[in-house]
Length: 341
Length: 232
Ligand SMILES: [Zn+2]
Image 1 (cartoon, rainbow over the protein chains, first blue to last red):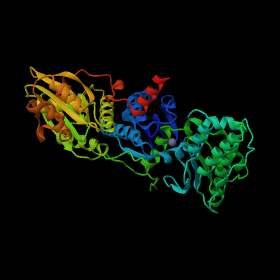
Image 2 (cartoon, rainbow over the protein chains, first blue to last red):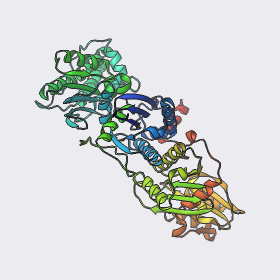
Image 3 (cartoon, helix red, strand yellow):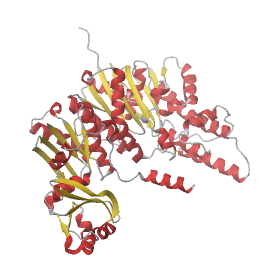
């Protein structure tokens, strides 16, 4: 007997993207609709939580309808609804969570809650089947983590940032250089036009640690700019961007490669919005060419930034493991990643 | 005809079921507790109790604000999602209007429902029943309680004030209106979900995708941004 196909709907509203997706058998995107609010938040120089929540309410049923229309699938054909429980902006999370609960209730469907970072990691399964053990490097505006997975649904954070996330450091440095929000892509582009001539610090922390720290680097960049200004010198922004990016990438790539060796993993997967960074992609690719026993997976840009296909992909695994959320599910802005057995 | 009504705009959590002209069930609590955790379980248990399945519903009515931004959004999100997925109409009713109707359906005079909005401000409006139906006399607004009381005093008529936040503003109101100010007691201070369903049953449906809360106020960041633009 052939196994029936499984269809999971993912709903993601943890920050400034209203997203709905349907994923088949945990690996195949049927539809992936993302409405970004970035244009609305640009004028404020960052995401304003209250405004993000207001946009989610305006968008949510429109995006749901668009997803079902593109999929040409009645909602009754779904096996479950998966939704981001956290972490994220609480007011924004609440829209997705309450929408998902209402949908599950009205259609008699099971509900599965998903950790946002588990989602980012599972974006990789939409590219290639996961092989364990693996290490995930998660880099985004809110996260910089190394996560060890010995099997599906098992997440062990082996390193995390002690202050700023990598994406946060990018945005702050971009602001110092007078660039518009969001700064990451601007720095990345500028860095490719310059060379890393300025020696900026790299926070390795204590020997053996897989933790990160970027606030010292951010301060060093700001100081470099201020000192130059006082001496009436001009530092080319390309040089500064290239030097900053070189420092961030050096730490990320070195620690990831060390973790891959120490844990003897079969795969290293990249996850999170900063995974769109070209410098990071090419540096990781270069390092893992030297480690042929470890396969490096880098998802396409559209799956690195927030989307709901990744939530459905992670939800598919949790659903198979029998995890169910009930009608009391809440948005949890500080949710810790847990192990699903 | 089976109407589900939802009000999560303030501390009161209200769920109602109206079957034609009969209020089948109401759930009301007035607690400083998280709505997000409690609304769907309340809907689920009330519908089960009344043996109403989701597919039996013919209309969703929601209190669309003003009130707590997050609270209103929870109710509106659930209402929009239910209406959309069940393919039934959605209607919104002012959260203040529900309170006015709950407290003063048989009061001969003006009704001023109010929610505290901090720093001496209130969300309020002025309503009146005529021939059994409610009409809006003054639009819902955010106003200083003292200014509102002076404005109502000029009307030289009895005004019934209603709401769980009366205690905060009662003195300012009494000073301005004297004996013409009437106040509800504990049972009149909670907006009734049954009343919400009745009001909504007579309202025309709104397009579900365009349905949004009535916050009354712009988000703070947006108001500041507009102010900065005007200065340029
Ligand atoms: Zn993310």
